[in-house]
Length: 195
Ligand code: GLN
Image (cartoon, rainbow, N blue to C red; front, side, top):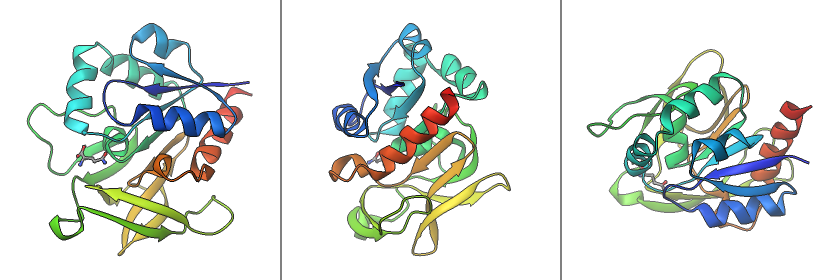
């Protein structure tokens, strides 16, 4: 079966490892380029995208990540991970770089002070069985997308889940809920790519 890595620089790595295991794949953390080279898919977890960006650069992982994305590695980013997959950030902190790959512009901390953290039932296209419980924590939203990007879910009129080819991103954190349907969708993408 397939092996899915979780980029383990910062963020909620353990929760993704647990969710991936529940979704039926072999999960392991990835910190070095050699470890990245050995996985069939990768999750970039939630956390703080500025920190993840700086650590990825310091660990010499930014270019290897970009190369594997270009070569078709399936990657799923949640929250900060969504930001890392965006071709463009509306309001980057200085020195903040992304891996990119999804033709979209994201707005960090988009839902504002009043709504720093909230939960919402989110219908996600491609996830059967009714809405998922979306946990939003200082979440981004997707400001705009290019023609190749499918918007899978919306909250208040803003896209909060997208897919472009083998890249999947959600503004919310399914790894915190015990509902593994989004991870199962990603596991299916990884298996399909490995065939
Ligand atoms: N606000 C964070 C950022 O900009 C993301 C928050 C999260 O991953 N829960 O990186």
